[in-house]
Amino acid sequence: MDQDPQAARAPNRRIALLIDADNVSHTNIAAMLAELSKYGTANIRRAYGDWGADGLKGWRGKLHEFAIRPIQQFSYSAGKNATDIALVIDAMELLYTQKPDAFCIASSDADFTPLVMQLKANGHDVYGFGERKTPAPFVNACTTFLYLDSLEVAAPAGTPKPPKAAKKSDDKPAKLPIAQDAKLIEVLRGAVEAAMYDDGWASMSAAGSTAKRQAPIDPRNYGVKNFPALFEATGVFDIVKADNGQTYVADKRNKDRTDKPAI
Image (cartoon, rainbow, N blue to C red; front, side):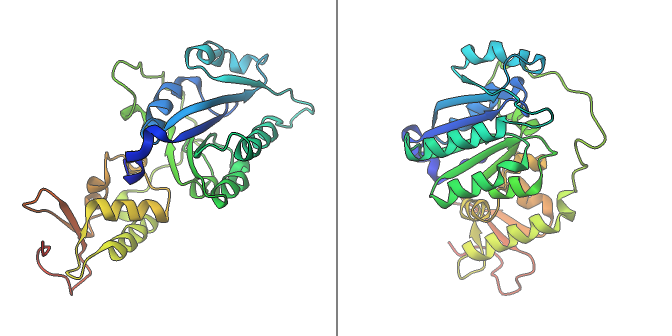
């Protein structure tokens, strides 16, 4: 989640953080809260699960440490996940009662996609955290989505890195090289076109913000730190830093652009 204009008003924005503890590791909570602090204060923090289950033992010590309210949800039927329903009900209740400025859904479950779409339809930003296996519909529905393995670069200094879990061949699909990611390049090209001046150049900050409005793009999900590095890695843009300190980007296909931005 790269910094954007809304971060300027971040201290006054109230965020409801709703965690599907069955699908998110407790080792990520410090980094998630640090990331959300760019956009506001997560003053509503709830984690959902069956807290008597062995699989959530690691979470129990984190609840008090990070002031997270545990929401107990029993599994009423074998093989059925009732946690999802409890989280959705709470989100809708919060929408009309506590009225937070934004929501954050931490899960890798695509079943939350309709919830995200409903919250956005009501005018709220929805930030998402999840694993690489998170289905595309949920990722694309969020205002911004950040893969949990990308949070290592965002964690505060001194935060211990979580132990790496054993890799499963079907859990984490191979990343497409940036220069071959046609969908990403299409979004970035559209962002430059929308943000460019008459000379064919767009400021990097405007192009990055425009790209994020089109799709839940965070450069760290692609293994780079920021939008300048992301645009450069595609190999299809020219990037220059002007004397005024601003960075500008232009599509190499645009033959009508000037050689340099007219500042």
